[in-house]
Amino acid sequence: MSESQTDMQDLYRELILDHSRNPRHFGRLSDATHTADGINPLCGDKLKLYLRVDDRGRIESSSFEGSGCAISVASASLMTDTVTGLGIDQAESYFEEVTQRLTSDRIEVSSDSSFDKLQALDGVRAYPARVKCATLAWHALHSALENETTPATTE
Amino acid sequence: MSAPAHITASASWRSDFPALHQEVQGRPLVYLDSAASAQQPASVIDAIARYEREDHANVHRGVHTLSHRATEAYEGSRDRIRDFINARSRSEVVLTSGTTESINLVAQSFCRPRLQAGDKIVITHLEHHANIVPWQMVCEQTGAELVVAPINDRGEVELEQMLELIDDRTFLIAVAHVSNALGTVCPISRIVEHARARGIPVLVDGAQGVPHLEVDVQALGCDFYAFSGHKMFGPTGTGVLWGREELLDAMPPWQGGGDMILEVSFDKTIYNELPYKFEAGTPNIAGVVGLGAAIDYLQAIGMQNIADYEHDLHTYMVSELKKVDGIRLFGEARDQASVQSFLLADIHSHDLGTILDHQGVAIRTGHHCAMPVMQRFGISGTARASLAFYNNRDDVDRLTAALGKASEIFA
Image (cartoon, rainbow over all chains, first blue to last red; front, side, top):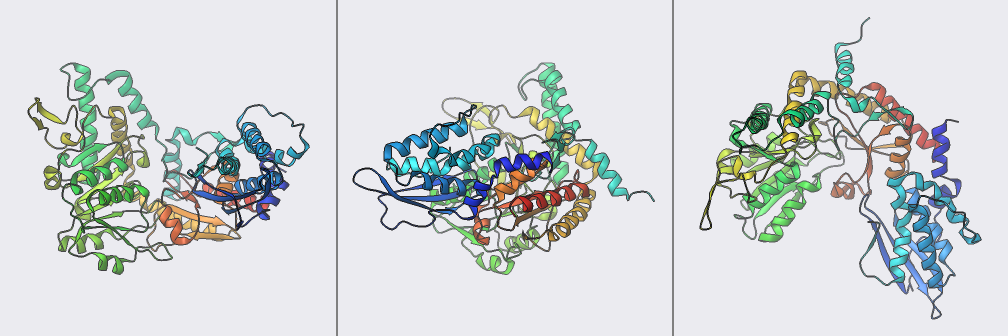
């Protein structure tokens, strides 16, 4: 196998390809309490995020719809998978951690085991043009929880 | 047997472009994104460097030697541009920052003062955003209406339907010479013939026309022709608006400032003559010097030789792409120039772009600033390979091999 193909597989890891082909939580949530649109102006990709938050501030369920590249769909799928069942504060801290992780120079191995899957996104760090694809769903999460009315963008 | 003459020629053209001779991701670069920005030959880069080292000064102002040399070089480029597009006079050649500024200039200076509510501006469905948004803005300012002529599944303008949309309320027609997303060469002379019979001016967005076709604005018969330096092997930040002298003469200035005036007092300002009336402020002198060198370069090869060579190469690219499993082509016009949009299976164009870049192959991905084209085909974007005369069949073979790798990864 050539070297460049090996590197490519660091970006397109099995878990990423799996989530992009079979996105979890895909579709509309009819009784959502929070929604947000995410737009990546660079490529025109769009997604809509739905959250149902109960009165104790826990994300009971989440889903998304839209179209995008393998990285953005997989990231949205992993994100909804991860935050379902979390409290709002915890989800927000995941947002902070993921966006920081993908845009900073140093990778730290997370001690939080529920973060394991999200580390599949680490390959994106070597592709600056693609980081925004991976962070789009997370920006939408942040804006849904903040109840912002303008679409989240990666800019 | 020796290689056909055009192949030998292409190898020597390619050697004139320093940026093409490098490795990207450990492989020799294959540059298939000239429709976004074409590479520059060494003669352009050297002309700019020489100007900056020896002649740099402001133009049209100083009595000193350097200012004189800078003015000569700058105005010399205007003469080359006049010759290159066969304009009647150098007064018709307005230097701008690019096609976008050229079109905005026409929208705001030619259209805005004259447009009445209910007037129409007719464009086509294949336009670049730069030939859509300036018209939308002036329509919003005046109450005029933007009318869009349809395209068919091959990406061709539906000419009969377009001509039917043109009526006595049509104020202006704006159409691309060549579509940047689909490569379609638009039937400019048919449109112009119809428009002229009704006294309707036609603006041609020539950004993708001048790099590939021999352009003679008098033969085309249009009224405005806009293009950019960096698509034709010159520097970014340079462009041209060519317009008929009588139309430009009747238009008010577009921006105010130095260089566009004859006399200024607080009571009254007398504007400069054409083309300086439209060139407020210190221009991109070095860039325009480079644009002049690019024209020298293109004329030495000959635009007809370029068009012939690229036509052969594009035909080869299309036939090779069609052999790739799961390929879908967008833009299959009978008259097409140098650009091919495509998608592979259900792989998103950005994933394709990343995988190809990893193999040293540079293509453009996404909506190509032509979102309505993407909407027409029900897709969010395409991968686009665009050719110039410095590309060859090996480049095409590297492209198709790289697509094979993309299929493997997403198998």
